[in-house]
Image (tube, rainbow, N blue to C red; front, side, top):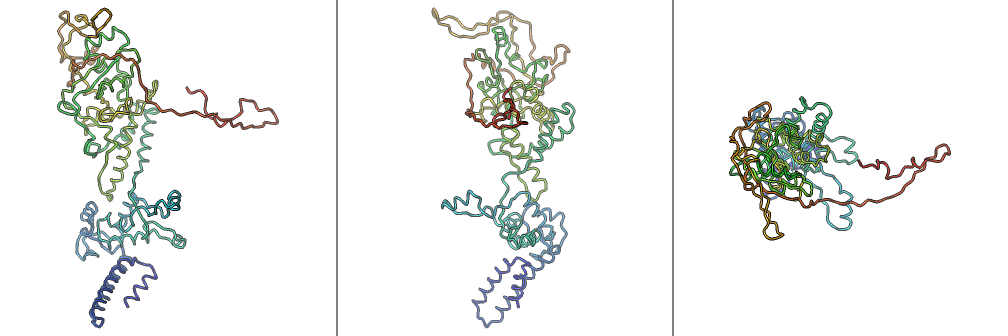
Length: 554
């Protein structure tokens, strides 16, 4: 009787018989070890098989009445969801009365999670793999895990529950045409799945392109769509996780790894050089707002502090011409600051449950943030700064005013020295609110004498740059500065740094080195003659394969 029912189910293919057959074989082995004349062995075999068969048929025929309780699902997010939203029913698998979801609901949630985070692997090898198999390089095994194993690990549940969910989803996606042609469908028992390595960021990529276009061609100063786009990109940034050696927001200031920054400025005349050396804290610090140009992280008229991790990086960033003199100095940070670590975004990751509807959006946001460092530090050619810097300027202003982040600046990699490690070669922009320099009581230029060296022997010149105060100058109170001397607007910002006079140095630029790649240029000729009413085709209308673009490069 039991064998006939199982054979009938096997022929109709209405349920998955894998768990049934497994238990059936177990009890067959058990019955063979006992005396065949003992009636309880056959009775036990029939009862167990009928019980398993009854459960499988119930799952197949009435999935909305097949209940799965919170204790049978160990996945934390889904288990908590069942506990908070599920009705109390008798679980079909453990026979306990607890909060439950029916099989159909569990299958729907599982299907959504797998579609978002997994991909079905190819049934057959690729052409390259076929070739490698043909020449005996290696064998081929289908990538990924069997779908039932994927569901079991995803739900963190027992095999029989995973089998019931898999069978329900297979029935949902199977069709007569695919079955007749032998084609594999989604969630088929023999299908394999693996986790997606790349998350689709198409939505955020589209928002970024719209963000760029809107700023450059539509509205620049009052643009609500831009703020919404930036909120979607940076929302939750302060809680995101990165590797052990990096953090999204780093601390700078006294006692930290970033305790000082370097500035550099090149001079094209001896008079300008002397002016910088007399008052280096003013001349090397942030320029007055009327002299502030358009830069990568600041618009024209907004005075901010651009610093570098080393003297070499500071000099390379200002791109001085050969033959000029460059003055550099270090600025000590005198109060704690918070910086957005832009390179750390390349390794940011977000943990969560695949059953959380917001998790896929967080993964897409993380995948987009990994490319943000490159988008914000792309090299810009001379002459294009005013236009190409607009998006990064808006992002910097948004981050400077985001209260939940409380940022004082941004740490970003240098594009002038990409060969050096990013941990040693970086730039820092301190927003206007954190860019005030604590000026020192230095004498004015008319009260100083500057010596650049002296003669040692007859024709030998020894460089010895020294600034000597020769007279008393007007008293200067370091704590009093003005944002705009014309309108007498008092600067109430708290100073964030002071110059280290010992680090002031003069560098003469003797040569510049370039890092470049080379490609050879081929020439070919492919003339296409186009007859026009038997007239001779002018030479200017002859088309070649290499003449589709304008020959003038500028």
